Length: 441
Image (cartoon, rainbow, N blue to C red; front, top):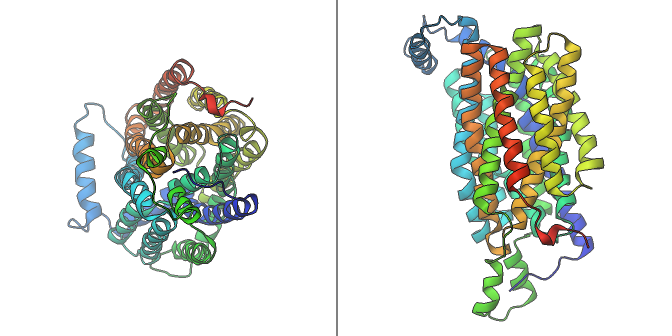
């Protein structure tokens, strides 16, 4: 049977819990973004492959050098940090691609609250390992544990869909997206500032990692105290203890579809494939082109987040999800071509403004469209699969794009990315349609 409509007051309370908890989670998550170049430099200095031939970092560099030597064109060692950074980003997302459908399916079976609290336990373990990461092996372990356990974003999306009807869906998803934008406004800058405070000599990033752990612990405690179960089947059982007929139960699992999940998932994959490569190369590009430090990278990411959060509250929540996606992919294509040719910081901030539009729109819109095509009883699994396709793209994008950047240079890398994004534009404008239930009458 369908779940009883959630009362307005309860819906507002659940939305508040989702917003606050996801904001804490994403601020903690974004701490590390501007630190990657310096993190890698620190571990390279600490575990010089020439002096520690048996360390995990040394074995990675053996493979890296073999890969470099497979090209006839000489490649400068100064780009090693770019490729290694891309590999770390790809590893985390590959593990997310594996874990997301499992977490989503478990949340359909056992409840969103239960799945989220178990996910938080893994997040705590991951960040605790980062705090203790005085060597590259421990840091790598923290990324592996985090990749396999992170489920907050997809479960927040599923919970937002659980408590929203078709007309509320776009605005509710925009609220979830706004958490990303606000987190990117403050998280990277705060992470960079905390990284400048050295409290542990053997791990100069322990202060940033320790505060990240504090935020995750606060989030977990808050969720445990205030998050109710939003799974529609649980609400249906609570409102009606009688047995459910076969005809009623199918309402939880069947829905008419305008866009196939395959089309939506592939669109998500191909968009994230190109966007994530550019996104992950961004700190390395600014480091290479303008010698940006962590604080300057954090300021730039904060600028993107500020514009994106403003757009989430003023534009994204009011436009139809399909129009939101269309706006974002066009803006992304333009930013690629600009990034490939810029020579000044003014040009950099112009490209960043276009990327802010993309950040505020595309994934939020695709999540909304995907949620329209999922019935109540399969929502967690379908949204988990949707996220998995995106994370699969993210697992390939950083490594492939950083390899291209590393081998052919910035101009070629961003030109190829721009051409790929034009293909995404063709797919979005030519393939996706607006679900009839999403159109206001």
